[in-house]
Amino acid sequence: MPDTIANLFLEFSNDRLQLFTSRIVDCIGRLSNEQIWARGSENENSIGNLVLHLCGNVQQWIVSGVGGESDVRDRDSEFAALGGVNAHELQHRLETTIHIATAVIGTVPASRLPEIITVQNHQEAVLEVIYTAVEHFAQHTGQIIFATKILTGRDLGYYKHLNRPADNP
Image (cartoon, rainbow, N blue to C red; front, side, top):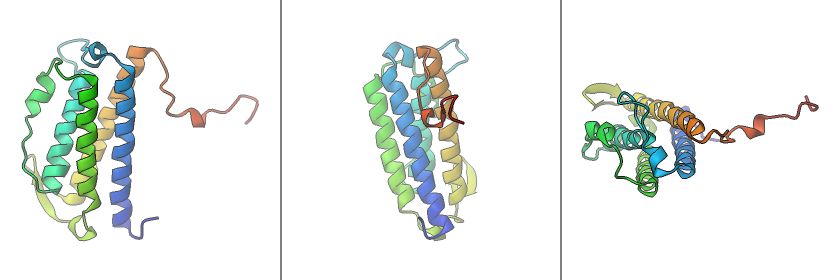
């Protein structure tokens, strides 16, 4: 158990990013490249777009904003892509980005959490930046899970442990 609230926050943030990443990787593994890049209309993003977007967002907010690396994000290209990146490469990009981001979060001392930094022209405390990035990641993970359920017609089984037999209350 973490010894401070700051450590609890930082460890939990990393745990959530790793859990969500594992769920996205699982979803990608269940889909064909065509399904990964499928859009219902021009107003929708594909799972591939969402993965590229998550990589860009985490790179910008955590790796660059909190970690101090260069901000090289091209946000528009994340949504403009119509394919060209296969499932294996998407998975690799996501896992690499999260590995770097969790390393950054893992080195943040509690004293930095109230520090004001600028990300996307917003001035926010490091704690807020991390929280915003994890929350954003969670929202898109939910979209990817929902889309995967629609595309496969299957329950993904992430909450099987909560199911009880009807005769065992």
